[in-house]
Length: 139
Image (cartoon, rainbow, N blue to C red; front, side):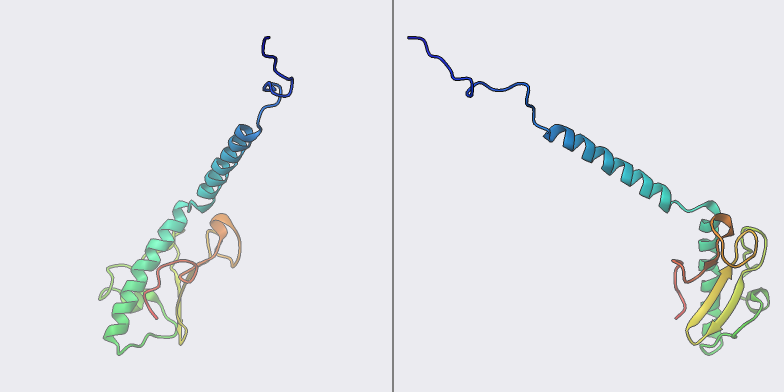
């Protein structure tokens, strides 16, 4: 007598597991998310320059503060304070304007108001300060 198999014992080739497709869709979604995050975090050239300038200026202000008994003026012109003793020249923002400076008990505040030199804005018109992710040297 020949062995017969029941219809339920034979593999059903019309029903495939959705697992490979789920893995593919998940993988594509992950790649898209990583690419979008990388583009979103990429700083424009002006922002990178501002970060570098703030680091240079804060280092010079730290040396000024050390030479003046730990004190900084509340306001002032950075050129008058830092040139030529602490810097050969104070960097200008990417649009050629001097950075704004103020100091208080909370610390030093440096800023640039972007291409249009107006508070607020986005992109090239965005405000930048030394408190928005720039290296903090002075406390």
